[in-house]
Image (tube, rainbow, N blue to C red; front, side, top):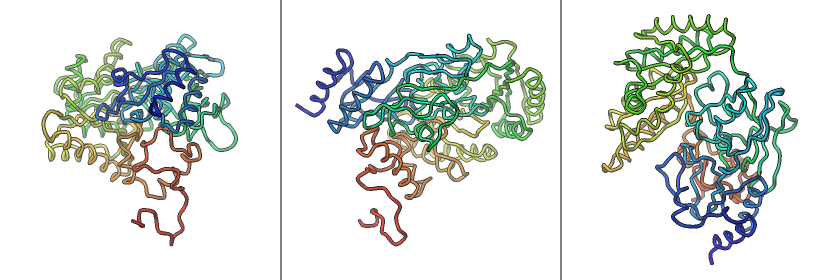
Length: 482
């Protein structure tokens, strides 16, 4: 009997029937997250119903010295929830209770498996919504959003998940159930909640999350502007921000992304557009109307050849339908693709888009661009056909070259998708050894055994046994010893 067999028996005994999956075919259901390029069949899958079962599962893993990985809806795009072949995948999809919606203090308390959009549905009758809105918000879960510090179109104005989480009940990598933060806006001491949000499951598993609710705006106006080139659309974006206007969202799609969206959802964007911008303003009616006039003029002044203003919620939804379906829509024009995620200074958009085009042509690989232009968060979609020898490798090279461009222009290797398995290899391009070891010091304070989501974020199997610490200037580094 293997370690996993014994662990499965322990968990079945402790959790009851229907909580542990060990059948090989059923396990394959969980072999990847949204980044299907990487697949690993987990050793076991556990489906806890509540925090106590989640904690019991982690303690059993610790006692058996078996690694564990948390997974929500499995929509992540960086391989952050990629299972461990000799480990346990803890799936929180059955923990879907909206525990409390408290409009009086603008809070909601939810379990990690709650779907992002369902928080808004629960809060809307009281005049509130949950602001972070990843494109997958109809299926992604709050627990995954917290792990990856997810963003979305409206994060330009409202900020990322980290700006909307004020408390979390967490199962630590030792199996303890603790509270980080709370209902108050701030807590004394070190910001452990801040460290936890975005830690990609390496510091523990959220079992209950307290989020901030945002009051529904008095007015929302949405504009779709069509340009001949991405340069013009980028210039319009910079002009809007430079004018002191902070839209709720500024989204850009290039011609290839538009082609994919049209093929998938027939969104009816202007024919012949080399780029479209979706600009959304929200807030007090008078302010929105004044700023909307500014935005319209700035788009026209930067070459927009067609402007459409959403006349009603249905037309606004159609504008967004094309944008929010773009990732999946690319499957209509390419059998395989890599969704890249990097950030650059917004003013560098035209130059970086040109450089991406050069890389694309040099490698004979198409790249569609659909992204959050307002905050410079790029999402190049690198298209390839895995059935064609060499294309996957070339696509990977293009994807890496785009990350290098983001770093070269002073940006980051990820904006909202996390590092996960996919980008761990790029971390040394952005951070020094000292940087990475300092991060590892924090991780080891939570997880000295290195069992929580191993192999993610850090480029090598940096184990806590390596004793991460600051090195003296004259001390040789471990890598230098070999």
